[in-house]
Image (cartoon, rainbow, N blue to C red; front, side, top):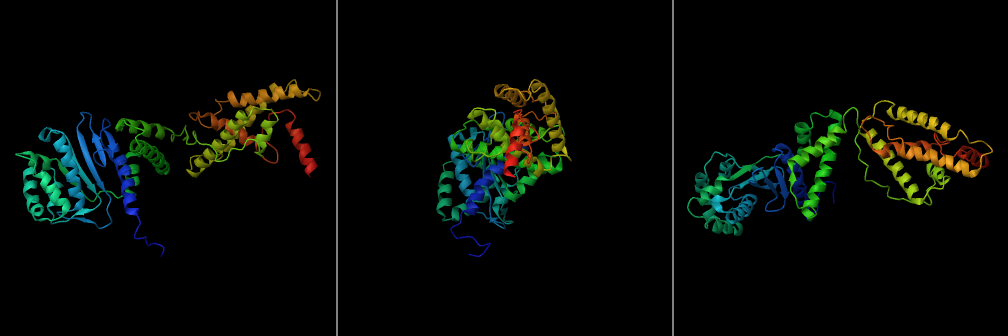
Amino acid sequence: MSGGARSPYSAAEQSLGYIYQARFALLRILELPEDSSLLLEKEDDVEFDDAAGRKSLMSLKHKAVGDTLTDLATDFWKSVRIWLAHYKANGRIGCDARFMLFTTGVIGADSILTLFKDEEVEGEARAQAVKEPLDKSRSVLVVAVREELATLVGAELADFYSRITIADATLRITDIPSAVINRHLRTIRRESRPFLFERLEGWWIDQAIQLLAGERTAPISGIEVSDKLSAMAEEYRNDNLPITFRQRKPDILDVANDPRMFVEQLRTLELSTTRLQAAIIDYYRAFEQRSSWARENLLVSNEIEEYEDRLIDEWGRYKEVVFETISDKSGDADCLAAGRELYRWAELETTSLRIRERVTEPYVTRGAFHILANARPEPHVHWHPRFLAQLAQILGKAA
């Protein structure tokens, strides 16, 4: 099969449609009042409620480029059938719902569906316009819809049609990120906006999955989205940095066989397996977090180096206090106790040593100490008073 060709069995377009629902819903909830809320795949693709509980059922259609909607477009009449069921089940004229079709396709210039683009067109005019094509169609779908519409009496048909809006030529799935960025992330530095969007969308997709899987039953509110976006945006201020590895762990966590120097250092302190494991996780998170900051160009020149210099300086000061009574004649127990105290300080009492004022995540500092303790050929910090001597002896023998 040639490079760009798709298998006739490909479900790519269908898959795009599902992803489009979630991505479009994110853009939409950012544009609606904060007191709006939504559910996915309940009675329609997306269901929005306003503060008063009034519903908007939305059908979303991501079509091939150049797709045109005609009078009997399947997408429209399938949606009409869904909306009609809701309308009849919720009081008919007493129903408070509105119905919307968002499609990337374009309504044909001579199609009666253009009447549904203009919200000012009365329902009676719409009902009259669609009557002839509906009566003439032999489509199984259209015939079924026609029969169901016939159950509406009096002013119900006009009322039902008056509630429908079609928005055609809507943004395609690949255009939505730039729309969110340009409309809703303008207070963030330009270079950081794409990364903030990725984080927001990642959180949003997780919420959507929870809704679809039934793990979440409460709708997603506009306030919840605003609060999440605000919290993420705060991490891109000049005195802060985004924290994105809080829940991450390395794929392989082999405490017993880890050969890295910072782990060897901790073994000399006779720490428990649990504490060794925590140290390895802190190292991983700090290392990966730094890499992420670098990829996003969030660090200023020499910021990491200056931060490490501060840590080394503070470590050196506390080391002199802890090791003040240690000499060549000190016993192993005293050296072990001193080393454990120095590491305890680094692990638990250095939260004020921040790379930036509002970066308070502990693994940033703890992991930074482990990175310094892992430096080769000689670590920049160490814990056990005699570790460097032991290391020199090992390297001497190796030479």
